[in-house]
Amino acid sequence: MTSSVLITGGAGFIGSTLARRLVDAGYEVAVMDILHPQVHTEQSSINLPPSVRLFTGDVTHGPDCDAVLRLVKPSQIVHLAAETGTAQSLSEATRHGSVNVVGTTQLVDALGRCSHVPEQLVLASSRAVYGEGAWQSGTQIFYPPPRSHAQLAAGIWDPQSPTDEPAVPLASSAASTEPRPTNIYAATKLAQEHILAAWASAHDTNLSVLRLQNVYGPGQSLTNSYTGIVALFARLARQKQALEVFEDGRILRDFVFIDDVVEALFSAIEKPPARSRHVDIGSGVPTTIHELAQQLAAICDAPEPVVVAKFRDGDVRAAKCDIDPAVHELGWRPKWSLEDGVRALLGWIGA
Ligand SMILES: NC(=O)c1ccc[n+]([C@@H]2O[C@H](COP(=O)([O-])OP(=O)(O)OC[C@H]3O[C@@H](n4cnc5c(N)ncnc54)[C@H](O)[C@@H]3O)[C@@H](O)[C@H]2O)c1
Image 1: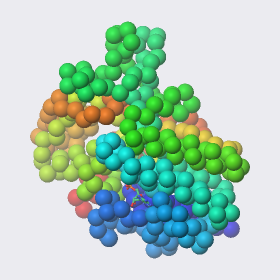
Image 2 (image 1 turned 135 degrees about the horizontal axis):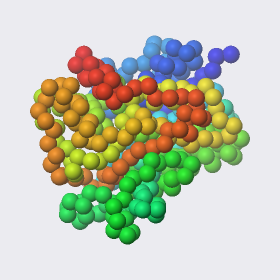
Image 3 (image 1 turned 135 degrees about the vertical axis):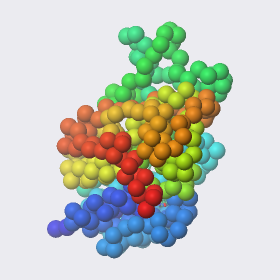
Image 4 (image 1 turned 120 degrees about the vertical axis):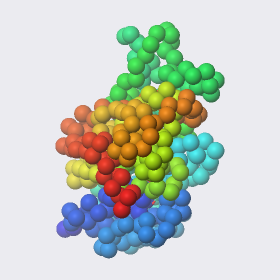
């Protein structure tokens, strides 16, 4: 029997790439998506295979969820529908809370009304749930609070250790790093994890939570000013603009290519866990923003990037993760280097 997968938010960057992967592998795929204008500026931005059933609907609206689930009884649901503006969430908390939290509760309530329990729920969560993450100073591990505006204005970029000794960030790991969200988007992503864990447990079904690092690649919205830095830098570097790098240039991120993320989601779908799993998905290779900017400038023949000591309130200093548990659990491994990935992104932008 053909397995069917419902992808909420499936017309977006990750969802549409996953939909294509699943169709190629013989799955029946349905997508529920509101086609949010901040993401989908024109019809051409929707890139789904013809066999995918697209339901235009709002996950925060119970009757929309009912209508989809009456027609589709998916073996698995991949929940991607979300508001994703990290900085934007601080001034639009209700919008993020509504879509990410209420949208998740509406979805599971609708499953209850349809008396349908999928074999697995898969959630794309975020590394944002860790906030500043765990740091180490000497032998001491500590969880720094968010960096204050005053600290950043004084140019003190690294979180302060309790002993004032130099500290280094540790790779986040779902098994051992405490989630400490520092923005509203992150808080809503953690809430999604808890809601789906409670529902899956109460209904004896399986849950995979994949905490994604910074995803980039072809298909990413280039017009949504709240999307990732790789897309933004790539667009500017192509225009031969000098990239501005914030703080001291040493903000650390794990940039993971879209195809690697989709393979991780695909592996989670193919191999549901015994009950639940929480894993971190990244390239496993941390990169500074300055290194990213230099690489893009070199490829595009743009001027040298400029480190400008500006900052954004709410940005975390370092994000990197331990991918070994995902490699072990999913039988998956990222394949794309940053250089190959940005070349693929630039090729797509230029097309
Ligand atoms: N892209 C990343 O770097 C990244 C990192 C970590 C986690 N994630 C998570 O992955 C998921 C997908 O992200 P993406 O990068 O593909 O984002 P995206 O913005 O490209 O896609 C999200 C999709 O959700 C849809 N949507 C928004 N509100 C909706 C609603 N009320 N009802 C139905 N659909 C709605 C949008 O129209 C869009 O098509 C999100 O849950 C996000 O939190 C993404």
